[in-house]
Every structure is written in structure tokens, then in C-alpha cells.
Length: 320
Image (spheres, one colour):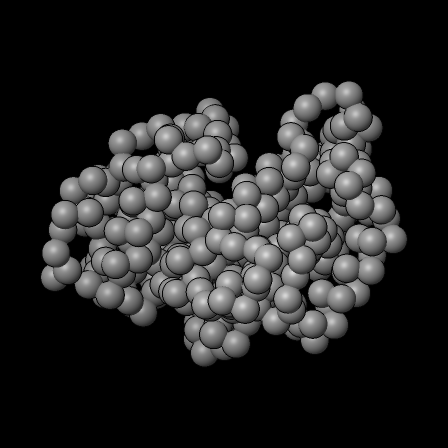
């Protein structure tokens, strides 16, 4: 797979992204307002995290609790489980990790939304769980999954020839479009699914902390997304565990509280195993060969959270 950051053939793509960036900024602010990411922290035993958005129509506070109750009720219908590799004779967990590491870098290059990244990985896993895939087609699946996710989530999706270019023309435009059809057919066009990101934005709001915690949450969640074994957990538990592990990592006491438990639906004890897995991934990240996510969150743009010491004390903790 080609390094999507190398210069030369990507100059045209870079120019296109600059033109889009200004237009996307306002839309991004609307999205953050709806999720409450711009709210300032408040203090109380159980806090009404939507009170500050009562007059903000974009936050739809009168419906948000019902929405997340619904998301929790259907999250298992739109996810893959960690046993689908048993039916894939030509690909394995390591190949999946290589693909996701590359997709994270491509996603960053195109400056796509977080929603697109999480939906892309969801589509990849659900497709691989339903269709036997040849090794030579795995990158094609990832490219076409990103195309589908971008069309669903973005205002301006990457063009097919841009994806072909960034893969060093390993596949043709026609192959990408044909795989897009195969993916949509295999998934029954079912794309409205609650990925971990859907829960992350709500749980970060309930956490009521700073940008360091927010970036650490996303770093841990993306490490989890690349790890095949994490599929044993449902999206809401991965999201809640990322928030808990991030608070532990940055020593934001209390690590868990009644507000977080009410909005996530999980106690500290219920999150312990998944949180330990995420912290262990953080611990090993600097020494791994696949460093796309680690480099991304080592940048000043992401507050360099990846280089902070992991919550090693959590690994030795016993569930309460």
C-alpha cells in the first residue's frame, strides 16, 4: 500500500481539499453544537448535560435521550463480531490491521469527518463478515467502503479517480465502482448504523472535560478500532471504555461518576475489561510497526496525546 502522504501525484488532491476546507468549517461547527462539544463543564452530582443547549435547535435536546435509547437498542444489528475471520481463508487479523492503518492515513489526507472513518471500518467489517474476500481484493474493499461512507456522511466525497490515485492505481475506476455495488448489495444498503463515534460524541459531552481528554478518547477508540479483538464489545461499550480509560490516563478524578453512568448505561466495573484492552494498546503503540494512528495523535493538532504515559495502574486494577 502506498504512503498517502508522499508528494507529487497528490498535489491536485491537496489543492481540492483546501478549497473545501473553508466551506466545511461552518458545517463542522453545527455538528459539534448538536453534540454539545462546545459546552463548558458544570458541577453537580448528576448534571443535566443538555441544559446549556435548551435554546439550540441543532442540539434537539427534546429528542436526544430517545435517540440514544434507540441507538442502544439497535447497535448489535449493525455490527460485526470477532469471529468472522474463521470463514476467511485468505485474509487474517494482521491484514485487517494493515488495511485500517492505511485507511486512517487516507482519511486524514482527504480531511474527512470522524463519522466517515468509523462508518468506513464498520462497512469493511460487516462486508468481510458476510462475503469471502480474496487477499488481492482487501484494499479494494477498503477503498470502496470509504467511498460509500463518504457519500453517506460528507458534503463533498472524494472522487473515484482520487481514490485510485492514492492507491497508486492498483485498481481501476471500474473495479472500485463494481466493489461499491457488491458492498451495498451485501449490506442490503443498510448504512444507518450506530458506530462507536455516535456514542463517543454523547459520552464526551457527559464527561464535561477539556480537549486533551477529547483527543485521548478518540486516540484510544481508534486504536481499539484497529484491533480485531475489540469487536467482542458493542459500540457503546467501546465508546464508554475509551472515555473511562482517557480520564484515567489524564488523571481526571473522579474517573467515573453518576452522570457518566446514567448516560452511558455502564458502571465502572462493567467497563474495566474493555478499558484495560485500550490502555494496553496505548502501551504497545510506540513499538508497533503500524503507526498511522500513533503518528496522527502525536501531532500538536491532536495535543500530542499519544506520547503521554498510558494508565498503567489501570492494567493492574481489579474490577470493583
